Amino acid sequence: MVEVLFSVPMILVYSGLFGIFAKIADLLDEHGLKWFRGSAVLFGVLWGIFFALLIISDNLVASFWIAILIHWILRRKIDYLNHGIAVSIILLVFIWNIPNFVIDWLVLLSVFVVYVAVGLLREFELVKQNWFVEYNSHGFVLLIALMIFNFQYWIILASFFVNTLFYQSTKHIGEKYGYK
Image (cartoon, rainbow, N blue to C red; front, side, top):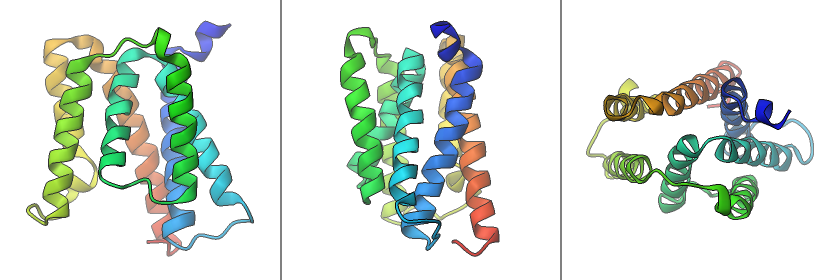
């Protein structure tokens, strides 16, 4: 039964839900969405839970998402209470799971370096906002390049694709209703 919770289909479900809940948390904080009292906290908790499920499901997927999380912390993207709640859940689960975690340094370091570099280029306006940057295409290019060295990285690409698809879909739905 436990194997089902950490299967490939569940990793993809967790990736999609993490994308949805992370974007809803942003819409509640930064874009004026109002649902109900405590909704921002609830979606921070849900974001944290589904991210945490991802990082205990697969070490390769965990190496990727932990690199993204470190990048968010470095670039000060954890800037609201619900973000802090999500990251606290993620870090507590990560620390609890350390005995079972085997880091893939190639994934962690390459993802971290690429995301920090692109983030800094954006921050200092050395690269224009375009679809390539908007949809994190640099992440897809990196993961495809990594798959040349080790095809096992396909699970990371699948997780990232599903997460991006659901995050961006939620973002576009929010924009359709005036939450930009």
